Length: 498
Image (tube, rainbow, N blue to C red; front, side, top):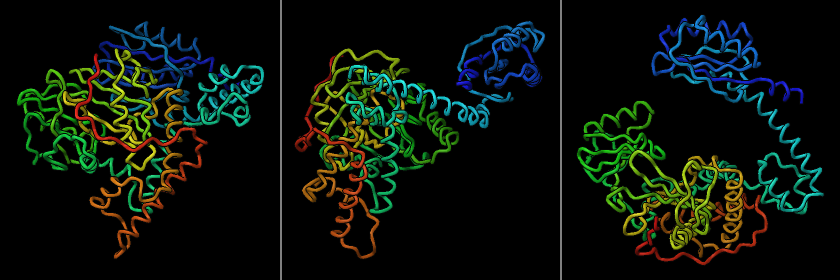
């Protein structure tokens, strides 16, 4: 604990200074003073102009001495404005000069991680050891609530032997499952030519499969075209072929009203849109390949809200709704029963005013049951006439940002889905007829020259079973049974009162 005590005596401050001073000379003066006081951190110019930002950490008295020197005007001159904020220590061991726009020094971040992670592991280890000592005196519910707050990698085997703790509750993790599944998909593709999720993640093939299942999809007039060949007109969304999320997405509502989804700005002409799109390609180093897609509108001629269903082979425990209102996106979460819920992610917004329709949950769950994968997120637009398919996402962005409880909830659903998938694989050709037919008609497989489709299909089936077995090795005995096959898409989805 000596190291922990040493870290606890240090404090950190971020100081932002504005005034009429020379940037280079001021940075040098700051660095010299900080080094003389044996403090660490960094100093940099801000891109906004005559501003300097300083991060210092060390003993409180030494930092107070530095701040007094700065405020006196003797160090870099008179300042028009100074803002001082208390921040967490990063464990810097030196003081660095950093110019405007650059990231904090890489080697300092590495040093911070090397110092912080072992310390945190020891702290968690001591907490878990204490929990083990008191476990036999605590009631089941109190101990379970404590375990739910501890990340799974810090749970000890001794603690899991306590009668009140279920192993699956403590060790399941959606974030860890996503990384593991990514590796499994790569190995599967190398062996049999593809992974089901990767086929559907391709935007064009994903839409083709959605149409194959009878879902409504927005028209895609142009696909994977260079910017100069795009025919742009009102009513179209312009999207990079490979970028994820809202990066580089533009909505052409009219010739003089074009909306940039990422930065929430309004563009006044199609010519300006082309300039902005070209700048996006250059700055982000993206490929100059673009898709155009019909804009789906909701009530009042506003772009339809997004409904993102987290689907675990027939089960839908979580839904994200994104309502795009000009310069601000409003996000609502719903649980598996359609009730508003918080997840630890996007919790800066209010809870939804009303539940989401259970029919929508059942519809998305039935679609996911036709896909031989333990998890897929299915995105829809909520139009006035019902759901319109958006895309399939096997690894949603920000999946690591959920709170511990939600991460474990989704992790348990992932493991249970793997167990159900493993069991269903033994039904052979009777399972996933739509997906098998779609692959046979639309996906060229990596097979030996002259190999018959029957042989390829057998290898695909065995590969899917191997995938399920790899995941099921982590699974526990699930009480849930597979639900009945899917249903016909509703002609019109009920809208949620807001």
